[in-house]
Length: 144
Length: 453
Image (tube, rainbow over all chains, first blue to last red; front, side, top):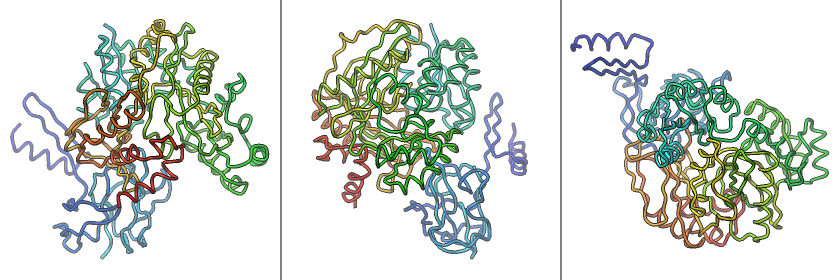
């Protein structure tokens, strides 16, 4: 497998609907995995369930800073609603008050309600329902 | 050489694999995609992936597990605890494939799995049950009628609940009127069965359980009591064997009752019968668990038996090799469950990578875990990292030994409940035995929070 082939595969994988592709041949083991979150994980430790660490803004979204994001306090499975089929807690455009429940992260058999760190309008939901998230992943972005 | 497939993960899978190795059986581990390379897969002779991370697609996937068992020519399946361990359909699927399920009959599992039916059967046979409704309660009017007889507080319990799930406590008629319809709906959503029954809530009661062991030939013995009173949200935190500060006559009666129930049921394999011990020294049947339990090591420590080995022997249709008169407990054992959660932040789960782990050891210290340094504790399963079991000649020694062990334990990378357990071990109420099933929630958590602030 030459380097061009690998680049070609990365390009195609990016456009495909697969999140993860693993290929193993006699002498090559290649594993490609997409990350959906565009905001880089902040380096500062997460202090509480819903405090976004004051860190520099993600480079490609220079109009936003870390304050505008809600980060996952723990790893787990992200749910937009209380139960399957129920109304999502928030949608893009929803106005929220500080402390409003935004989503649930299921971790270790417990349903953890993630609440809004501040009042504002949710601009986008950065994770899909039932998607696995890692601690410090950006989950929501507030509108400026 | 016979082959055992272990239909579980983590600590209990490791526990079963170790016994298989010890008694010369080949072991096959199963794992989900997120558990690839975890300790139980490393220790087993063979391992096989059975599906994605979600439990219902892997550790609860009966077809997948049976297919794996057939592919590896497994003669037996050990279900561990949780997951499929009390699932009668899984047992029946094993039977159909000629694989021996290491556990009781499907009939016993179904009967004891219906907590209300079990209660009724036990009462019919003259054993004490917590006062409450006769059978299930279908309507609010019936519920109110029961309350006139029993008084308050009352518990509304889901018939298909168990293990501390599906319980609501009501303190007066107004609360009963409010909670009864909700409890029925919750039971339906959680267990697919809306039936509920009522039981008096006994304040300041203790949770005492009896380990039982029986074979297919009607031989049944008990391996004494365990005290599992220390619970938070009905999940046990610290367990001991034997139960102490109880009138020996009451202990003997509880043990006899447990064996009596086992005989009446024709139950075989290992099981646990749970009782409530009220303040006035009366005991009542609560429920039976038809599997090996998390806290089984405290019993193993004081009786010097290997309960997993005993389970495998019974599943192979052997007769019990131990007799009641031959077994005598020695000393006292305490188990501390160490969970990946942060007690100071309302016990928030703390999955992640264990960057550092230093384990306690020495005479009378046993550590059962499914993780080592560098391993990840995934967020998809329960939060238990390990159990530390310590022995002493008496209770006080065991408490001190457990305190030392927790002092030696170092875990970094994830938050753990170790400091919480350590604080319990030093608490005067705990040391003097002034505890009840709500003690952690009503008394100790505040005390702990004040100490960490």
